[in-house]
Length: 554
Figure 1 (cartoon, helix red, strand yellow):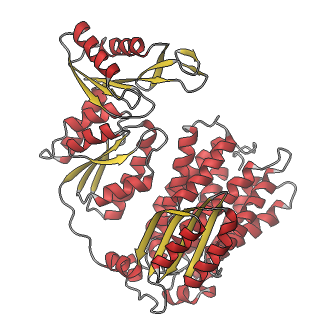
Figure 2: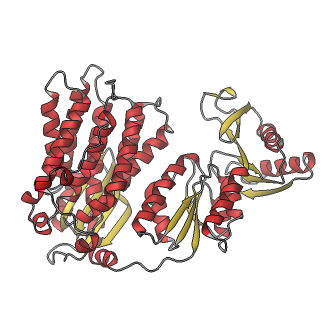
Figure 3: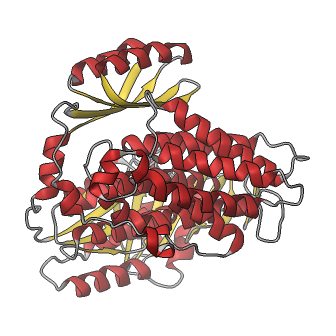
């Protein structure tokens, strides 16, 4: 991709694209779910595509910290892997392979290549990859739409004066035209009076790219071409559709660690067991999707090929029944807290919170937080992300949960950017208060808690406090490095003095995994009692990685 002014491919544009694409899919998700009648009318194509792109976005954000000056190659690799690991459903798995193909082509681009040619070739490779991933390709689906987009992009790129923005505009327009023709190619769509759900998702993603590069906001083909307007059924109509009595009863998905040469045999075995087979990935990691009657045989095929994990099995009849029937009434209020260590998880659980594992290197995805919000069964949910990079992920999950619930659940995200501010917030949680008042009190407490930490530098870097070398001790206040030293205790006590300079009544000290006996934490508590005798101090075993000490002052 190039910037709207025509520069070369940049990470800034990639970061902008993933944000716009996720937001666009979130907005179109219900519409796409309602279109979902093929291959199984389970009403989840929009959700699966949204969660897949969200996982890719979360991965690239995790890898770069949102810094547009980060390494583009590493960011694209993270984007591709994130899509593969986070792919959901038939459409999501196919989409992950397409996104991976685009990312790999951009990463391999020669600096002398025309940007338009790179992007057109990327779309061609994405289309080829989607067809190769599917056991038996069917026309009138997202495959057809992506191929039409790739062909239009290739034709546009032949003109030496074409820019990447023109390539994506041509691809998006062709995809809209191809989407309108899908009912003519697939009888099940024609009978239901809808366009293909996966193809509509491809439209949304290409339109997002077009918007980022040109600033235009394309109109849906169903609005732009009244003579060809195709009705979108409501989800209950789709959910009530009968399953094919001759079709498989289960959807099986799993990640697979396997050598590349083991995959062809796996494809053959799974193809004999069922349909809707999609196997994507490479270099030892694969995402497998298939519809079967014999779940055990599908998993055994994976075991024969390598090591299957994150196995997910869905019974279609039960899934459709769940969509048709109203969910049980949600009641009460729950707190969802992201915890960076086992000790911290225990503290949040003791306070009544539902814990989602997190922390550096394993931050939760949008899908994981959405699952926690949905599964807790509460009508009112308060989310404590407890990490700066997880705040936006939590906000997206909250918006999605509220949209899914059709007004039956309220979700508030308190933007806690550290574990200790999350502990401060949950300490004043009171389910008996009105929801808005509870959120207000928890938010105010979190904001008034001054927080710091001590960590050890893993590499040479320039910080706000000056240069550091591997092994240096770094002091953190409010997320910024303010001190570089050589002794953990000396740096920790300096941070405590800084935090207490503005006063305080309670100091919370949380020992990390690198301080299993709590020796550093205990010494720091003693320091507070000696030098700040009017201040109360409590010590907890948090078990968090990378940070031997977390502290807060309330």
